[in-house]
Image 1 (cartoon, rainbow, N blue to C red):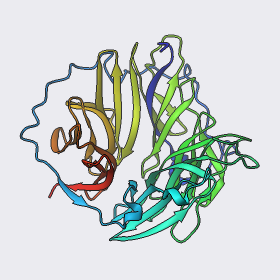
Image 2: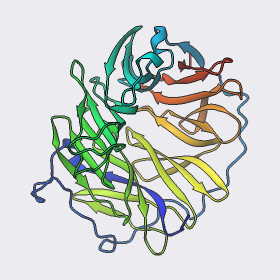
Image 3: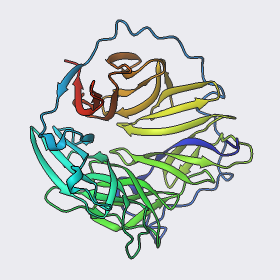
Amino acid sequence: MDRRHLLGAALLGAGAAATGKSPASAGAPRSKALDPHGYARALRPVDAVAPAGRTVDLSDVPEWRLRPIDLPERYANARFSATDHRGTLFGTFLLPMAEQQLDHRDGIVVWRQGRCTEISIPGYITPYLRDANRHGQAVYTANAARPGASIRHGADVSFLLRPGRPPQLIPPLSANGEVSVQSINDAGIISGTADGQWVTWSIDRLDRPTIHPAPARGGAANCFIDNDGTLVGTQVNSFDTGMVYDAYRMQQDMSRWLPAGEGEVVQAYGVANGLAICRYESPADFRALTWDRAGQVTYIDGMETPMKVNRDGLVAGYPAAGSGILLWQGGRHVGRVAGSDSRVVSVFGLSDRGELIGQCGEPNGKYRPAMWTAH
């Protein structure tokens, strides 16, 4: 990888994102552009080299309990990856072979207390539920399996799901453009990327996106939104120095930059209640870290990749050694799910009620939806 093209995570206190409205001064759905060289220099919020990781003894960390998800056999292969934090799960499943077509192989399933609602999505394949909010509004991505007036075949597309309504396409910014959403907050503001930019949409005005330019000169890799409107995302950095040290302001709100050092990568994975989770990579190390509102960075020993974080600061991710799932909160490991070569476990979702959602491998090689809790 060219070291001039590094990934860094940016934390943006975006007032426009919180409301879903475009800045009045812009006169168009676009946030004020940022000049990387026009702002005062500030201390870099992370050391150039991450502290050495410590060997972690997990023998005393409690094992979380498996809670089977009661499902009809039709949805036995479902992958649930989003929750409304009130007991509803959103996921996808593979249609039976007899029902599959070239442009219709998958469906969406919404589960609540043993009852399933199926949503058909002909014309789109490989869907993935990205996120849901407390109002049961969810967002998902897919690939277009048949060309449309403004969508090319194979393009990344995104949809909004609302209770009692069919899926609603989030329009691309340009002809044949692509849209990849990552999250939706409780105010109904969706965040994601489109045409290499950070973008937010209000569920009531999907045709009026707000573009949020970031300090980096490269393209956007992902973008997550917190309930207060804060954006956390990843930009491909193309500064000649390969390093970024500046703090930025966007409108009246503080923007911070968590840069990658020479030969490093820092990539955002999500945010909840002010706590962002990121993955740090260097030629010799991979480490999960958290990044709070004050700019404090905390490395999570023993965790390589953080997958989800909830409003209570509970982080679920994959361990640096071995298999399984680790759970971390407030500076300590609070739980684990054991895995092995014959029992592969995966995490796709984490509710504010402390429910870990994923899949568990079976001896026959199949994967079943699973939920784990502390008690």
